[in-house]
Length: 65
Image (tube, rainbow, N blue to C red; front, side, top):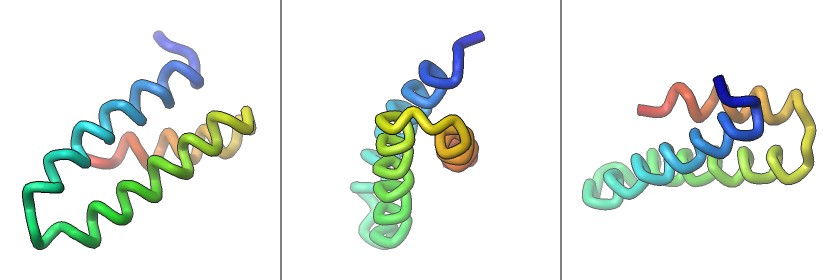
């Protein structure tokens, strides 16, 4: 099982791929904005090393499908 840093990094990559799919749907502008913000928040949490922020970001990204 990966550690939190690896898991969060994997989720960021996975959600970036999902975000690309939303670019083809014109009506998904709002969803794309929310996903981008979640990715930005996750990257900030990863950079800060704050475990609580990383857990929160991981949880948010894990729920994106």
